[in-house]
Length: 166
Image (tube, rainbow, N blue to C red):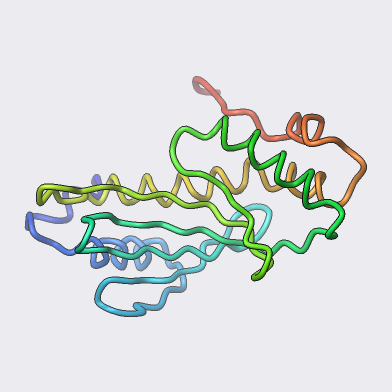
């Protein structure tokens, strides 16, 4: 059964949908407030902290996926170059590095202007895209921070997107 088939109401709050998805996947989560939820999603490389928040003002569902990263200060210019290269490859969402918090961040916003409603499938796709992107580029970010590889060379190890079926 598709996620969207589980919801019959048109006016369900997007954070209620996220809570349902988190429960369905057995992810640890905390409903921070009516308009915000935080959860932990286990990936292959690490556990990612994901927060989704609904903004009534600009009618946007915001996703932030973070993981700790403490590169040496002298590696920051290379990391920023790598981030620019990665973001050129990302069609939905973007990475940034929050140095003060030592966090790598993937951000995405789903704009639902005019009273549109997010479907469970859209929200599940947002979460999946964040984890897949983090998993794909995590090894490259680590190589940039902890090896002598250039950002260009480090990105060669990024897991390529698969096409077709095996």
